[in-house]
Image 1 (cartoon, rainbow, N blue to C red):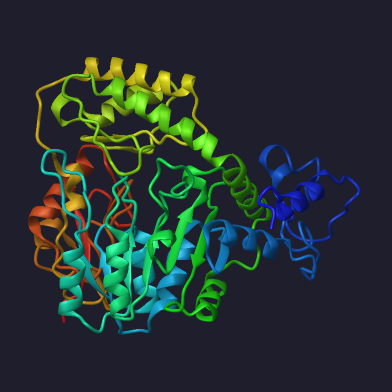
Image 2 (image 1 turned 120 degrees about the vertical axis):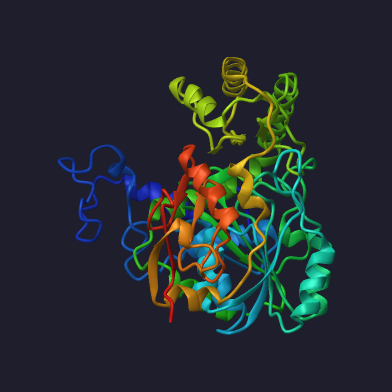
Length: 468
């Protein structure tokens, strides 16, 4: 297999370039000149587009096999609904309703949704938290061992590695713990699609023992938004069941453009990844060194050298105000709250883009400087220690009622409350609402942090399981 080949992308581009094609298929705009202006010109279907109506050329299969080979997997499937689709397929594949699984509490809401769909009972483990910045560290291996001691019947381990801020647990050791109990390790590696493709980067999860992995090509590689890869290897994951779960969740009308971009992103990574990632690493190192000179700003060293995370507490500046300054100058951040900024660096960055980032941040932080402070409510999501009363599925389907925030403490949550980004549930269905946490989240919401997936984003009211 030649990793320079792009069978699916080539087929998609040939379709888009052929003006002689007259489609009597979806999509309805048909790329007609009087309708398909702008972005619609790049839209195409897989069936009757990049491939024949009956999918006889197998260009998607070829592309998926190339990706599986590159990552050393037995199976790869291309996801057009982001890592969400892969995470939920894994949840449906590893166990059956009522089974327990060990799961990191800093999981993305998509994994939590997978627990609801599959009817799984999570046994939570959580990372350590840096008290100085309020940011997550690693999940100790001992914490996973303790979880298995509590629930030796746990059928799988779900982790998020690397974390949103670029930290990696000892996955090889955790895989050994899980495998000794016959349980697969599955990893949401959404933020680490580039890992393993440069000597200065940590290996990807499959290379150190994970049995299943999902990674978002659209986050740190060069695919269209929503493009992700689902991988599996080894004997602890049933590949036929995983394929069935994937197809259950998969749209029957996948975007040929997203699929083709995944093929192209894989080829770029295979043929130019080390060169491009080496440049990204150097840009991140230079930016980190410059930003660390700003008084009070902490730029933590994570395990992913491309990851740039800024802890603002020592500057006294409000991160949302700094983000506003950056927005006005054309810069967009991946995460911004009062205490933390995450400007995402990827293979798409240059000296000019990173230099501009450093300059804008330096000027804004000096303008917004205030009294140094400890980590505040915006970092609360990293240190949640839930009290579980019901399984996520039982709480999701239970009768519910909306109650004022002042009466929610002690009740069982029936909805997700997710500060976004990073998309990690702070309150989740089945967990007892704690007054202190709820008040912290209300404070963060009032300060400008978006609270997603809940009925009342202000958190003046909370959806709870109805009283019997």
